[in-house]
Image 1 (tube, rainbow, N blue to C red):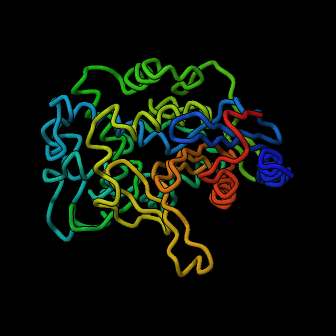
Image 2 (image 1 turned 90 degrees about the horizontal axis):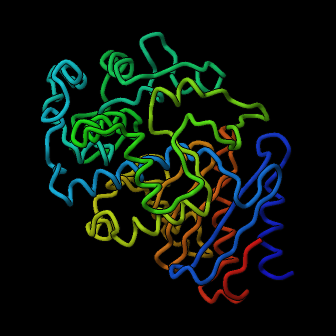
Image 3 (image 1 turned 90 degrees about the vertical axis):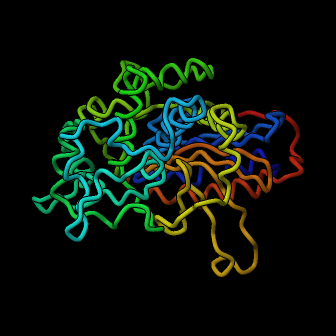
Length: 352
């Protein structure tokens, strides 16, 4: 069996008719001369899908460009941009208020300590994410986000060398970008997609077809939530690599290439977080017979991935579109990379 057939077999085996109804995967060499793509189940290689938290690296790209242009600075306090009524009381730790000390960089790196309105329990004892996954399709405008977060206990004082992943950070960052540019975050993202010729990428909600999010075989309704965020995105594996290549090569800011292995802090094992970028790195003690390369990019809670592997100069993107077992995509990603080795022995620009 050749490498193309092996990749096709790999994705086909992932589809189980319950948690994973479809899969899309694409790998490209750094120069774009070698391409391998495969899909199975209810997906084709160009089927648009919900990317979930991969949107964070895209929002970070917008922020980094504004920093490079001098419109904002990473060290700026968020109180410089956001209304006092919005941030007052958003971070009180051990009797001291840190709301006015939080910086733009701390939002981007999840080091602010501000709790996540989706992952941390609300005053009613429930998590926002649990309600969404259970099919409770409701809006979360920023004002509601802040109101709930102010009733939650922060993770830690900002900037103390710890990171805690949270959607709240990027909701606040998005609002800062809106205030600085006087454009909606949706418009800013759409302009970026047009600029990069990402033809199949758009901000939700939009009357365009894409695969709905699945959990345990059932569709999750999220239209009301998407409408309230203004930054949830649908894309394809091809477009994801188009964006990631631009990001890695310094299209938005030359500083992006300097962030590798600098300032990354653990969030969810084995993921670390830097300046808007995730690092996926498996320690050697968990892979004693074969050292695993390090991946830089971002993943999403529906089993979506967009990563660059410097060791092999390879980009890899795709999804299993499952909120039930999203971690499965990492096993598939590692196996796919083994097939797509540095010699690219299956030949140039092969696409299925």
